[in-house]
Image (cartoon, rainbow, N blue to C red; front, side, top):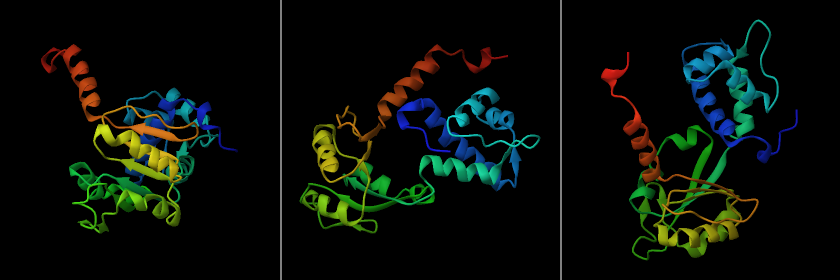
Length: 218
């Protein structure tokens, strides 16, 4: 079956695919070979109908009387997400956040390989950040082309984020993960996901603020 166009699949369904994959991998570690849509949904607080609807955007993966074969569905979801291959990633920003991200071990296990780190601070350029030698932004385009980079991480202060995003796009990067607390503008055809920790905490505080305390839940 041909892959649907990205804009034809609701964003929440795509986000849930990552949750399904993580849960399926957890089931595999427990030697589960098959799983039903009800069991997969219940493990994530979703209905079986929601699971079936999300997966139906991409094809029919279930087997009558069996449900889903865990190994097969893991492979299918990885293919849909594009993580059945390795993506080279560059990061701009070698501050505290950049240091933390460069040390994160979870990228490689999911098919993402950080290949270079950049910063425009002369005091940081040339210094080591884990296995990387921090490069100046002037080398971004050359490195991105040489390493066939399609994904980039923006880990710079808000005031510099748009300029960095523009440079990444000009270098041929087509997917940006933005950690700067600011909205970025990118051209059509460039994917952008933003992680604003303050916004996430605000959403969390809203939920807790309106929820009854544990003693009220019976």
